[in-house]
Image (cartoon, rainbow, N blue to C red; front, top):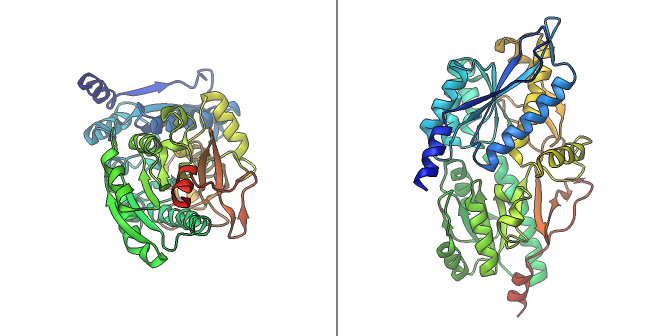
Length: 424
């Protein structure tokens, strides 16, 4: 384990430059740093989404600026931010100072992204967030526009909106369980990894769930990289919880889902579990994560006319469904559009153009609010709810919500062992 940590620590400060392979072109390559924890699935999503976007742009000859086509060149920036904020800082500085990246996309762990954001702002580099959810990242834009105007967030929707979707999913499941299992009052256990991004979700949940007619039976905060949560699950079972309200962005999501299924805890798992967004979740949990419900960005349903084609292309190339950090694909296409419209690589000229973005993308209509945060809601980006159902990750929400049903969505299924427990 120590050897692995040492390797990752070194990797965290290393940037890998991948040439676009267009040396014959007259235009100088536009370098985009792709920042993320590259040893983990979240960083892989960053890199894979960016790769598809760069390939798409370069297949068309690159970006037209000043009458010349410029290819996209990606720089892989391994932040190692799961394990070390200093590594993330070093990697960011290396990407800018040594590899001379023109723009940046990615970032995942809020604690690290807050620091990386400042480095990007110090150097007046447009940095498009594709991983960290904390509202403060965008609120900084409103508080100090001149300094933070170079920051935008494309994915995920911020923690407050994540909570809204969480509550919608929770309310949906609670309604189904109350009706089918004749439960008069739903009891909820809140389980969130101990990380800054999840703090607002926990606080709002503790306050609002009782107002929704539900009882909070306790809060549990395991490590983001915990390898055993049986103690927490045993305590949750003893609490009599009917639903476990989850907030996981890291590997603890696999640990939790596997042990939840093995122990057959009689409570439905609903909320955020980033690990369950990927195809490998089924194998990683040995199928024990069946019936896990999570907020997601992508599902093989018709969110827009772009979604299924992107989903299939991604899966064919990378043998994996895209998780939300693959939103680097959208980020780079948005950036590319703004560069061409501004006809410049000057960030001060690009920012006003990006602020006017209205792009029908792979996860909905992307537009930014005054804080440069992606807009949420009907008509914009909504997110989706996906549930593992016997080996397939199915979209179960939106399903007749605010007039929206994404073609291909299916009904939610209560875990059978939960049904058996309450129907005895």
